[in-house]
Length: 306
Image (tube, rainbow, N blue to C red; front, side, top):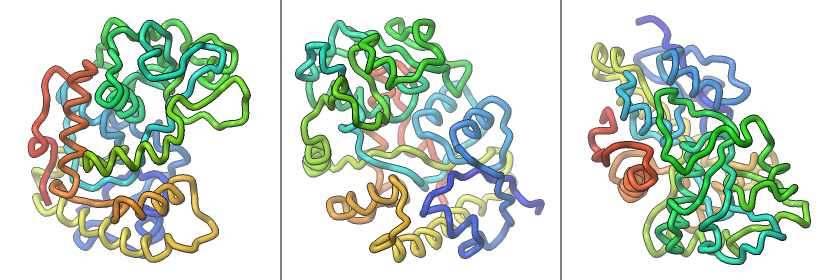
C-alpha cells in the first residue's frame, strides 16, 4: 500500500504521531507540512488534496450535505467550550444575549466555522435568542464552495477585514471568534464564561467538538481495516499526550484548555461515537436550525466505524 498523504494540525495530541512515537500498524502516513490547518481543510473540500485530513466538524457536515467523497472516523482532535468566544462593543448597548437581535454580528472567517455554530447554538438554546433577527457578517468565504448561506448572512460587507478591528471601531456590534482581550472597547457578552460553560456541560452532558478526521471514501472501501487502524494509532498518540499534559511548561492554548476542561469533563479527548453522542446530536441539530444543512444527519451515517 502506498503511503497515505495526511494533513494534521500541530497539537500535543498529534505530536506523537507526527514525530513517529505512535503510528498505524498497517499503513504509512506521509504527513504534509502544515503551518495552519485551516487552508488544508479548504483544499480537501475543494480538491481532495489529501487521503486523510483533519476537518472542522461543521465543515464536514456541509461537505457531506453536498456529497463530498470522504467520511469521518470518530476521532476528534480539537475541542473546547465556546461561551467565551462572543464579544461585544462596549458602546453598543448590548448587555445580554437577547440584545443581539436586530444587530450586526461579525463571524471570524465563514458562517459555517464550527465555533460560530456552537456560539449561535448556545445563544439560541440557552438564552432564547432568535438567530433569524441577527445579521451575520463573515470575514471570508466558506470551505465548501457549494454552500448557500441563509438570507441573514452578508459576505459582501466586511470580507477580508480583521474581526477585532471591526469590533473595536464599532463597525459591528458583536463578534464570534477568538479575540485577544486588551481593548476597553471590547468586552465579553457572557460574564464568567468559563463557569457558564462548565455549568452547561454539567446540565447537558455536551462537551463541544471542533475538529474531526476524514478519509477518502475510495480508501475506506478498498481497505475496510483503515478506520480501525487510524483510530488505534490516535488512541496510542493520546495516551502519550495525556501523560505529558500535566505539568508541562510548553503548553499551547489548546493544551491549557484541555487541562482545565479535564477537571470537569474527565477525558479531555474522548473518541468513539457513544462517548460523543450528545455533542454530535447537538451539532447536527444546530446545523439544521442554522440552515447549514437541509436535514438532520443521524450520528451513525456520519462515520466509518472502526
